[in-house]
Image (cartoon, rainbow over the protein chains, first blue to last red):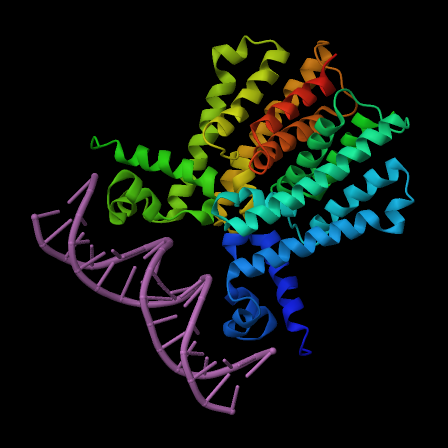
Length: 189
Length: 189
DNA sequence: GTCTATACGCTGATAGAC
DNA sequence: GTCTATCAGCGTATAGAC
C-alpha cells in the first residue's frame, strides 16, 4: 500500500462494510485484515469509530453534491436526470448487493452516535430536496405527470428505491429493475 | 412476572429491540435487564440468539397470515384492504419509531444466520404475494387504477412503506402519512 | 425454570517502541 | 505512520446449584 493513501483506503473499505453489513455489523478488525494493517493504524487516522462513520457519510454527501453539479447532470433532461438517479442506486446493487446510505444508516439510526445521526439527516435531506426539485420542474415542463405534491412524489420514489435495494437481497436484482420501471410508468406522461 | 409467560415476554421484548435497534444492535443483556431476569434464563428458552431471532420472525409471519385470514380483512373492499395494510405499517411508527421486519432484517441480512435468512425470505414473499393479489384483483374490479404489472406495483408500494418507516426517523411521522396518501393518489381511480 | 459463576473471543481503545 | 502489547468491557454461551 502506498503511504498517504491509507486514510482514504480505510474510508473505502469502511463504506463498503457499512453498506454491506451495517454500522454495528463491522469492526476495525474487518478493515485491518482487508488492508493488511493493524487495528492501531486505523485508530491513528480515526481515533474513534464514530470519526470513521462521520467521514464516510460526509464524503458520500459531498460526492452527491458534486454529482448534482456535474456537467452531465446539469445538461440532462428531467427524464435523464431521473434515470441517472436510478443508476446511482443501481450501482449499490451492482457492487455486490449493497443497500444505500439512507437504508443502512436509518435502520441503525437509534444506535448511532449523534454526530453520525446529524450527518445522516443532512445527507438525506439534501437528496430529498434535489429530488423534489427535479419532480417539480419536470412536471412544470411537461416531462412528468403525477398527482399531488412534488415532495410527496419524491418521497415515494426515494423510499421505494431504498426499499428496493433491501428487498433485492431476499429476491434478486430484477426486483430493483422492475421497481424503477414501474416508477417510470407512474410518473411518465 | 408470571411463570410460563417468560418465553413469550422474551419474544415480545426481542421483537421490539429488533425493530428499534436491529439484530446486531441488541443483546441478551438488553432483554434480561428489561424483564429483570438473568441472561442464563434467556438461554434456557433460546439456547442461541439465532433461536430467538427465528422465533421472532416465525411469530410475525404467522401473525400476518392470521391477519389476512381475519374476518375484518376478508370482508373488506380492496381500498379498505390497502388502508389496512397502511395501518399495519403505521403501527410500527406509532410504537416509537420502529421500522418494519423487512426493513430491519434485510438491512442486516448478510450478517444473519442462514435460518433467519430463510425465515425472512419466506415472510417477505408471503407479504408480496398477498399484496400482488390485492393489487391485481382490485384493478380487475375497478377499485384501483395503475399502469403495468400488479406485482411490480405491489413492490413499489411495499418498498416505499418500508423506506417510509426508515425515513421517518430522520424527518418525522408526517413523512409516512404523506407517502401513504401519495400511494393512494397513484393507484386510486 | 431461574439462579450464580464462569469462560473466552471480540470490541473499541490506549501507551509506547520503532 | 505503523507497529507490538495490552486493556477493560461486552458479547454469546455453558456448568451446575437451587
